[in-house]
Image (cartoon, rainbow, N blue to C red):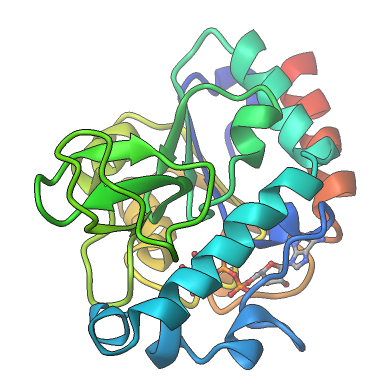
Length: 236
Ligand code: APR
C-alpha cells in the first residue's frame, strides 16, 4: 500500500449511496427506486418509445425533488478535497443529481447524465432543464417539442468513458463511494484500476458486489467515512 503522501492523482467513483443521507432514494436497497418503478418501465429507450409520459413523470419527479434536498457532509468534503488538491482529481459519478456541484466540487464527470439537462431528439443539442418535460416544452435551440431527459438509460453508452479511462491511466488511487458495483462499465473501473496497479479503496454502507476487488473496504455511512478519509488525505 502506498503512503498517502505518495498519492498525486485520484479518481473517485460515486453512486447513489453518497446522496442517500441527503434524502435521495438509492436504487437497489429495500424500498429503493427500482422497487417502485421497474427499470424496463422508466429507464430504457424502449420504455420511452412505449410510454413517454410515464418516463417523463419519473424524471420530472426526481428533478423536482432536487429543489428540496441539500448536499451532505460527504459531498462537501469531496468539494473541499477538489478545491485543495493540487494533483489530478476526478469525481466520476453515476448519480444524476447535482449534489456534487452544490457541495463545491468542480472536476466531475456525470457518466449517467444529469437530471438538470435535456437532450433534443431533433437537433441533438443539450440544454439546462430545471422544470418538467411532461408538457413537452420546446427545445431552446430548435424549438421542436422533442426533448428527453439527458440521462443514460440501460442499453445506452455512458458518457465520456474515454476521459474516465484516461484519468484512470494516470491515477495512483481509485476510491469508490456509495455504489453497489452492480452496473457496468462503472462497476468494472476497480478491476481496470487493479490491472493498472492502482491502489483501491471502497467506502460503502455494506459489502458490495465488487468489494473483493478492493485493496481495502471501509464500511459505514458516507457522511462519516468520507470526511474522515478526506482529512487523512489532506493531512498527509
Ligand atoms: N453511505 C454509504 N453507502 C450507502 C449509504 C450511505 N448512507 N446508503 C446506501 N449506501 C450504499 C448501499 O450499501 C449500496 O451498496 O450505496 C449503494 C447503492 O447501490 P445502488 O442502489 O445499486 O446504487 P448505485 O450503485 O449508484 O447504482 C448504479 O445503477 O440503476 C443504475 O443508473 C443507476 O447510477 C445507477 C447505477
